[in-house]
Image 1 (cartoon, rainbow over the protein chains, first blue to last red):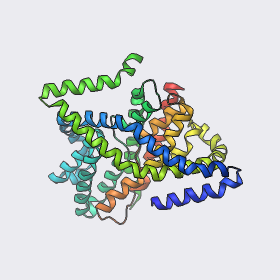
Image 2: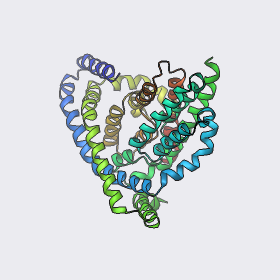
Image 3: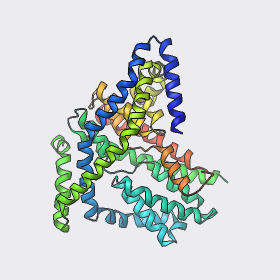
Image 4: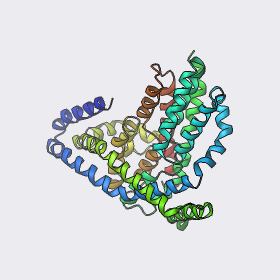
Length: 189
Length: 173
């Protein structure tokens, strides 16, 4: 899929550049972009390490488990059929609490376990599997450390001052995802 | 409020350190282990970024997004979205690295504390690479028909982008 995107982007740009009289800029852009990518990673690596450390610390203090307890009730309501099976509910809980903490490396395997469990439920689990995908594609992250680090590296005065806006936008996205799910699952039959 | 905002990072760190002290967790060890994971993450994302940054830079240099933006900017402005962030809306669900290339560029050219820079950051922080995430879960579960998952996820993305733009305009516009 990314190969298609890459091909379309490059073809469009290469065909359009001479029409726009931007051939020279376009010619220089590729190496410039590759170099910019390396500089970008170097500039954010420090912040990435720092915040991964803080999140690791919070996790070792039991933050994921505490979030998981808070999530039990909403999860049982959103996923009534999966919640009947203990191991699916546990995987779901782990997936969402790791997502909230921004621990992508822990969230994905747990989410895959939950998804496999739901698929094994057959027709009965199909809607809940879709809902799992929707919840995971709407970002739930409480501490958007990467983007705050990018802000810091660009010279922002207070990199984390976007937090309330990120929370509001995330909440709005999750709410709309759940709303769309509630509507579409009825229309789909 | 602004002092509190500026001190968010140190406050977060202190809160985590106090929590660790209360729980008897070795803070230094945990921070070091996390930093190692951060370093791994940086190494893992580098190849994807080196592949997608040039494509986005090339697209930018060709002037195509500018021309399209000129066409679309009345619509974006009517929706309350800064026209500079138009390309992020397109790239974000498909490629996290591509969208990050564009967001970093906006933050650099328009400034990280400009309305466009902040909107780009909030959009990046409150959304996910929808198609990639959906592909990972659906293929791992062995599901061929994804039913309504993608349409609902794209509704959530659209809501996220509009809400990001509106909240930023309210707070910093």
